[in-house]
Length: 430
Image 1 (cartoon, rainbow, N blue to C red):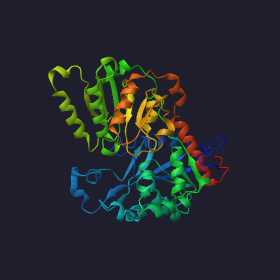
Image 2 (cartoon, rainbow, N blue to C red):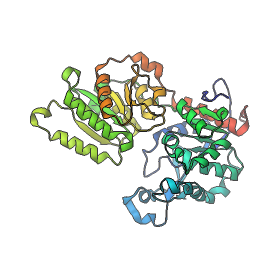
Image 3 (cartoon, rainbow, N blue to C red):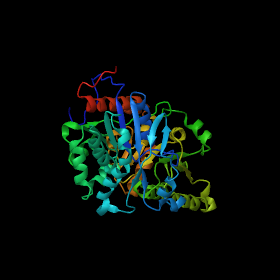
Image 4 (cartoon, rainbow, N blue to C red):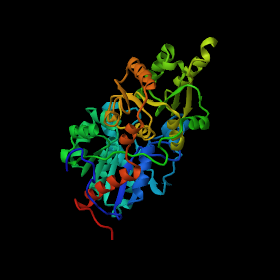
């Protein structure tokens, strides 16, 4: 198999009896139902093709229940031990961890994670064909140890920050390299990520591209004006939309500075430009403060200036309507994998202004489906936003760049897992 080859192309492996144990911390739950929508969608599609059970670990340390709503681990104590999400059985083991461990003590978290899974091992034996560790560290490293205990092959699936940031820490890199070397396959969601996995230790012949998909029933070209009316957004002017975790690492402060420059210098046609921030996170208050400052600006400028609207986290159906309502998506992250919101914007035929990081250049073609800028450069971002808003974009280019559906993505993943479990020929269902 060639590095970066599309998994399963030209191969018909039918294995509906395939049984997959999916191990990850990044998965929705009762407390965080909107978390990690891409994982949920791919897994739901995969579960329609084979048997899947999820071990979605919850971080735990002594006294965590006393923290209440003040911290994320405190809030997560309300998550039940067993649940069902989209028809998939989900078990939430409590995985011990060291809060604030940082880079130096990070290697401790993989064995602690495994310790949280150990009570479940007796009930897992003989029930699965393959283990999938989704998120490189500590999830995939713990999944590798669990697979050895169960006598099963395992596959590693990486997404972004786990490869571009955490796996590069000197303290954990040997653990990551060991897990990648022994994995049946190491999956990346973009070509640059596949190359990064090889650099981290994955054998080139077993490093494989399986692209994420989108829900085509939700994300498709739609009437912009109708979507704005439905969402209560300004109908006059242009709209720039950010969707994601509202954090420094997502470039939210660079976006706010670029938006100020855009408003100050004006945009072609003299129309106001509005910024809509969809998501929650540690910097949401900064966005809300920027919105208040703009609302309280000089009266003679207020009518002609665009607004900043912080609408908070929204379910996927609402994200789709926000992308339909916008003129472009802005995502100035410092580091990324292949963000699903970028794929969703392309499916909705909306241009993307994003940073040239991770797998984004693999899916956004400058001048055809968007513009790319260096990370942490508010000036370049402002210029790109102005340029993108002034352009007329070709709908045909977006049709050519449309990502696969989740059904197609899940089928590619299923075929790969079947080969890991049963060999190159897979196994035909009885």
